[in-house]
Amino acid sequence: MNVRALTFGALIGFVVAFAPSCTPPKCGPQNCDGCCDSKGTCIKKPNNNNNTTCGSAGNACTDCAAASSTCNPTTSTCGTGTGAGGGGGGGATGGGGGTCDGCQLPMSGACVPLSRTSVINCGKDNVRCVACASGELCTDGACVVPPVNKSVGSACLNDGECQAALGATAICRQTTAAGNGTYQGGYCTFACSNATCPSGSTCVRVPTQFGEDPICWDNCSTADRCRTGGYACYNLSGGSQACWISPIPPQDAGTPADKVGNACAADGECQNPPEIGGACLTREFNYNWSGGYCTKLDCLESSECGTDGGQLCLELTAAGDSACVVKCANPGDGGQSTCRNGYICDSLFFSDGGLSPNGFCSPPPAPIPTSIGGACTVDMDCSIPAGAIADCFPPTLPDAGPSGFTGGYCTRFGCTVDGECGTNGACFGIGGTNTACFQTCPSSDGGQTTCRPGYVCNSFGLADGGQSLDGLCDRACNAVGAPACPTGQVCNMNTGYCD
Image 1 (cartoon, helix red, strand yellow):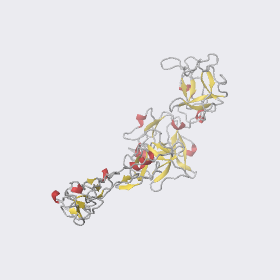
Image 2 (cartoon, helix red, strand yellow; image 1 turned 180 degrees about the horizontal axis):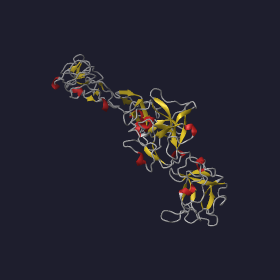
Image 3 (cartoon, helix red, strand yellow; image 1 turned 90 degrees about the vertical axis):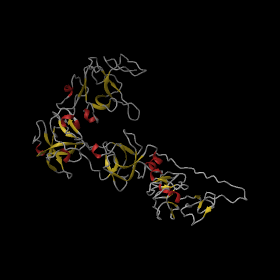
Image 4 (cartoon, one colour; image 1 turned 60 degrees about the horizontal axis):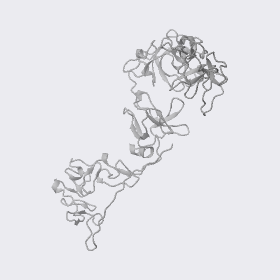
């Protein structure tokens, strides 16, 4: 991780007045171990602890008696009693009658509260304020040299320690946003509303019940473990890992779900306020949830899924995406068991590989579509074989104008891997985070090749900046309704390519 160390400090200047050699030196820190009275005379120890001449280190004497106070002989400051923490009148306690939790100004003895101490006036527990050296920070009333090798996940006492190494927007996280978890020893991080985090860290948005806002987590691996004491390495979606609080803070999972497994058409039909995560599954996790399937997403344990024990919290993807499902018996026979019509009792396995006596109600896994690139007018035209998850780029737009997809074009929106597009398709981005399946073809920029009339085999960019050898069947620029060519190019009406 590349970080820049910033140094904070203060330059304190002392102006020393020199008089002619025949004049005695003026009373001050350089020649007086007590305090200096109004005439500039040094009141030496122990007379500097009298009520009318109270002070030390060559500072001006204070008349404690005038403030109805007494001189504390331990600190040589005004305050009741004889201990370092005394103080019932004015002076060092700021007139409030309480103990100064910060430090006292050298001249007046006034209290600088701990919350307002700085590199110029640093100290705690009623001591005399001091100036920190250049490059030091005043941390909890003590002058310290900030470590410059901090990164996301490093221990910290306050924001300043993290900012000295990571920049002005770094924060020292002490507790979760909801206060339900503690970052032992502090945790240098950044608030992140998107994926922007320093190298070596990841922006993580945990489910609401964990009580934390999106922040950067320190990456980890088997070779690079997390800090000991209060932290563990967690798996993230996408296969990466990062460090966070361990054990996981207690969660507010909301009211247990009461509609798991019900048929539905929209999320609102599956929510039981204030339940968190109620949703209606229709085609998620590569299943066609016939008639809709009420669930609760991002569950952590089965108790969140219902109160009668008939539900399970199950991880449905290798990335750890979880959801509540209905429990069923005898999954090994592949039958319906107690599930709704159209659903089967799918198997669950123990960690040792053995078959569980319970399963979960699920539709049969959706077959892979073989229709990608084919003609269509509605989505159902593309669900080949039956039950396959597929969609249709229609030949006309909602305003009845041509879309450029001559005869329509079978695709699958929201694909994540090429395998979801069948043997003759691949998954491509179509703007933003949106994806869709396109038919592949053998020769990029080679004309129609294996594509349907109205389509040409277009090349696509590779991660290394080069162009592919194969291509995808895309709209020919001379097709009716096709989008205009990029700026600086024109459509070759003979070939269907933008030149």
